[in-house]
Length: 45
Image (cartoon, rainbow, N blue to C red; front, top):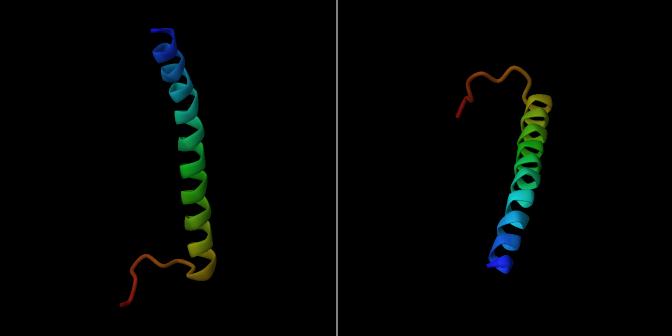
């Protein structure tokens, strides 16, 4: 039971780190796309 509790606590501590990494990646992607294609409200394909 202690091993199961320890793995659950490590998962809880990993989840915010992964969320922060994913949100940082998304923010960098959005910023880069706005630098390459400024004010692109509609993509002309």
